[in-house]
View (cartoon, rainbow, N blue to C red):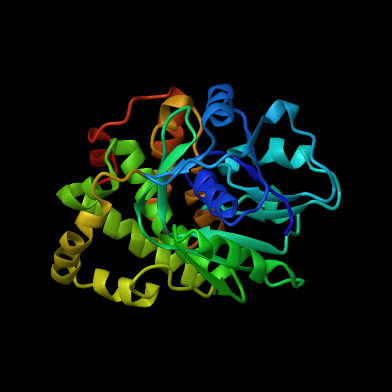
Length: 322
């Protein structure tokens, strides 16, 4: 089994790294937060109430990867440029990210993971918790084969933290995850709501449903196949959204599993950088001249909030109404 390097000791990085470590793999975490590195060196990595496991932690500034490394890229997309600039030729990169980054796409990596579970890491610590169950979809990107894919999947399954599904092509699953993330993250982050409140608040829910419909239309209009990353196929979700009474009823069915969970963009606006270009920006590029007015307004509002580092609030949602 190859040694595994996890770049980004956040919620997903700690969960994936813990699963590998629990299987007996040699795991190194690379992280730019010095406090988190110190915590990992002292306490190892932990998920929920499971026993802490030892792992190697190294600050990003001190990381010197070799061409034989297997790097699981679990950073946010805005950190990709710094990571990719550090990689020598020959490194195997397996991204587990929600957004689409053109520089990463140009790398030509053969495999990637799409996390349909939610994992939230404590600030400056290497302890995370799975706040919403789901699978990791692990597959090829339509290119060359990766002989280690099955072995990685087997290793990850042993911990029992999340389901692992091997897929022949990861891209349809990533497109579907984008359909949801590009609706949830900008609205919840701008309004300062958790994911459950996005369904409980009537205005937030109405906007969420409309953005979701636009996202589905953009992806289908671009001719992109969509995989199923939740209980319902994207086409069924789109059909439900055309029936407001049914959609509102189902929202309350999903509310308990989302209550108290936060989107990956939460807290980023006040830091002055978000993944909006990798979420909504990517959808707008796919849409071209096709109409998607709400996505365009969402993009403009998030960019303004990001530039001004404004504190999120529900008043932002009223700006997005017609």
